[in-house]
Length: 519
Image 1 (tube, rainbow, N blue to C red):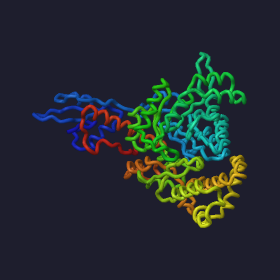
Image 2 (cartoon, rainbow, N blue to C red):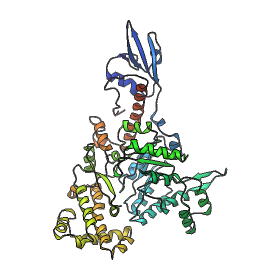
Image 3 (tube, one colour):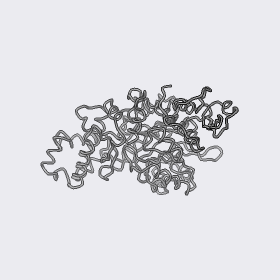
Image 4 (cartoon, one colour):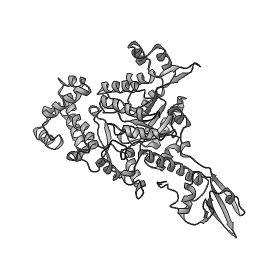
């Protein structure tokens, strides 16, 4: 038997849910004695909880979603919530998405990876104009095959005074990420170090995490100082601060991922941080698509949570309607690994949606050919004909011509290195397909629907299952800030349920899972 927040005796799970979901009021678990029988009850009314015949067993205080996670994260980044929309390459995390999140009090990162500098320039300018002074971030992806793009992104972040970069896919520190960090260091009137450029490093390996937990390497600082990229004072101050303010433990996410379980990765990084006596915050990403997942991350010690896959289906994302509909129909198990475009030669994979597309199978075939052949001319004639007919849909010679034109704008050094290297030339031709496959999805090119490369993790399917039958099921209702609000409120609800269970309360089935609310 239960009592609702209005004082009415309640007997159904729906009425219990009403009490639990009223996060602005406390929740009392009481033992009611009637004659010789005793039963548990819930109420949000303290006077009823302490009335005659009732004994208070546990109290869950009011809980606000903006109290979840680290107060330091909210303070340092100037946001109201310890929740971030992570970057999605090719501008899928668009200027509209970043602006909407910034205005609602959340941090979001523009998807600059795989995007030409002119477009990044225009996007950062638009966000700066439209965000009304609210903080935002830009993605800086490590590009070992295209170092010019990494430098260009840092140049643009400095030009537009972007306060935060989300560093991703780094295997080691590079001069460009160090340059961004150190150029923001200064000494205040009180002598304290001021950090003007925040770094959030998204990673999945402890050895990489340790590099970001420590100050910038002296050899890189010496080279930057000698090149006039930083001042002597900045080089000195760099030795007193870690390379990052925050590390995001990237678990089973879409795109670049090692698919490590969050329950393994997050505690590992927390222990590493503590062993170094560092104050760097550790957040969680990968698999965050429901309130339960977000709460679980906070309960394990995450300072903040990062969502990615679910935001691709949001109204404000840069994905096409066709791709959004595919994502909205995805299940938890409908993802697989495929060769990446930006690290193709290294054999690095990304996690993509396999529902409704043949991209993964075709990309794997290209990598197998790259691994076994010395160049395009070494591909067996029958396989080459098959590639030209089904994958590239044009002669490989024409693809190389387009590749030259593309890199002439993006990174001319790529072509120079490939001129006398047949295997390098083959890699660039194959990357033509890998790169355009995501563009075809973004533009919704129906002729190339079977080749869509859609970065996606299992969080997408988990979200779809949670949203089924609610107003969030149609993609037209999935506004990115609204998704954030629902997940954070649901995480607070889930935390309340967990606290009452730890106190020994047995809650009725059907009352303990948060449901999206249109209110």
